[in-house]
Image (cartoon, rainbow, N blue to C red; front, side):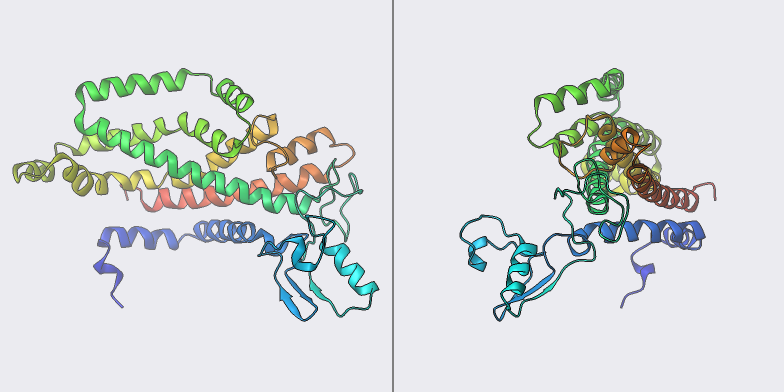
Length: 342
């Protein structure tokens, strides 16, 4: 196995060693990875479908595979109610084995138990529509993390591209791009989100994401522009030009690797910013369309019913705080480890 020193410079290795020596970095990583792994495997932990089902000698995995009703000989319904099917099998004396997840509820499943306090049946209680809060919390964390990561990817793709072009070519390109960023910054962000989501509700996750990204890439572009402006006339760039290197090669081979490191330290803060933005929009009712599981929607219910159902506010508050604190701890550790003054 080749050593890491063959792939990374000594400075980069020292910075990563500094990062992993920080206790808060490990606290943040453990906190973030626990939420990430737990939420991304939500079907295993919370689902109204069994993890494992043995019926009439055949094995099924309903939580992972979508079976049709005809697979189990059901002709009067298009949806399989596994609880009812297993109950009928047991009453008929059939040897049916079933293993449900730890929390045997789906985030969209409505029950007669409206605003029930935490119990053995519903660990964190139910909401105003009888939906299990634990299930909605787990799936809501996955939606928030997916949104935050996609927000970071698109913001960096646009911001890095625009920042490189703007800083390298300067002149009129820089002037007109700055005016575009100023225009984006003065537009009423919330009004645009409300208008777009009001007109197009069919796929609100991607629509909301694109609208928020439209207003968020400018900061990353400005950071990278400053880095590129300070590097474009350095000796190694002049030498590359003298050797006949084209602009694209100079940007991607010589400038970007030296300019991107300070920008990468912003990654955790960008992810947490995307998560917080989605939570605020959902809290105000301008985010994802119902019945999508959402931390902001749970927070909004918690505010409405705080006197009668405090668990609706407590559960998403703790989960959101845990996730954002973990990500920000990683960001602070990265910033300290990659600080050029050290």
